[in-house]
Image 1 (spheres, rainbow, N blue to C red):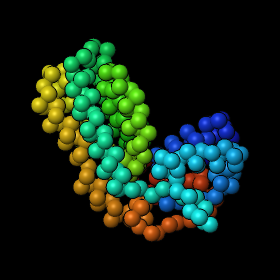
Image 2 (image 1 turned 135 degrees about the vertical axis):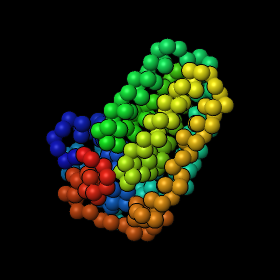
Image 3 (image 1 turned 180 degrees about the horizontal axis):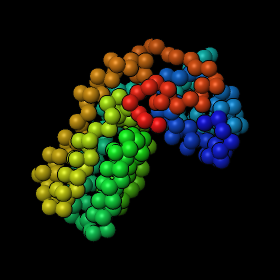
Length: 249
């Protein structure tokens, strides 16, 4: 952020801001102005304004009358709804995938598992979460449901942020990788009952841990009224690193 990197061009400022929000580089609850973002990312105010409008429609930006603009806090009700949507759709998708998956698809899953193992060893939570999401997308693409995956991903901003916060707080959950391997094994064995059990647990296993985060980091969640104004130059600071959570940059 705040560099002359070509990624900050006016054409892709929406993508850059969205990525920085989802990766928790920008702190939930942080209040800023369009000018702050324009200067930090070295982009004109008009494309910044347009990007913020688009992000507000996704619930990632909140406009505060007479006060500025805020990186939306994590809304736990939306976390639950976004997870529910993914759980309902994905179970059906994986059932279809099991019936038609071929060697190419299985190879993709196994290669993804290898990359996940690497990111676990490196303790790179951002890369692990991205690979986790890719692993699940293989099922959708494999049954020509990539559009469904795109819709779910576009509406998972709160879910993705709380997952990243959980890993930053506790470290990468090695159980997630183990369950990904079990899901792959169940697909190969075409064991639907086993897959159903693993998948249901896998997608809902973090609920108790997430609820603890609401008490531990109350200012990051929407139910609290605490809002922190950061100085404009702090937009160049990585929140996840700055807060000294267990994320290793």
